[in-house]
Image: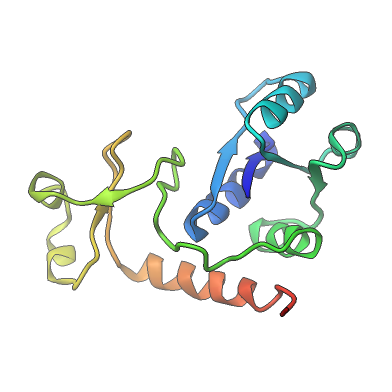
Amino acid sequence: MRFLCDEMLLRLARLLRAAGHDADLAQDGQTDAELLRIARAENRVLVTRDKRLAAAGHPRAVLVTGRGAYAEAESLTAALPIDWTLAPFSRCLIDNTPLRDADPADLRKLPPPAHELPGPFRACPACGRVYWPGSHVKRLGERLARLAQFLPQA
């Protein structure tokens, strides 16, 4: 499943990316018509807090409720079978690009304490951001595991 989140759902888009989902984020000021066109052309599920936009995009749009990324993620999971453990930490949280293994030049960008960690170390080929398994990854991984509990079992 590929997603297009409206501009109000930045944190939800990043949470989806952390889980490994292709989650594009609408640009500021894009019209509803543009979002609907992009969602159709790229075969994306449009995720929004806007009732009119969700109705216009039905059935390929989901209206999320709740405040905050975690509540929005629960709402999305109630509407769709989201796998929150699909491919954790395999996409750039900033620009949605699939990550690659970090090379020696990437590793030189790490803060000194990160060099002691076991890895994996990954880098974004688009923006150059380097990812390592620090405390933030542990907390986010725990959040993804909690969200996975909401997925109905087959």
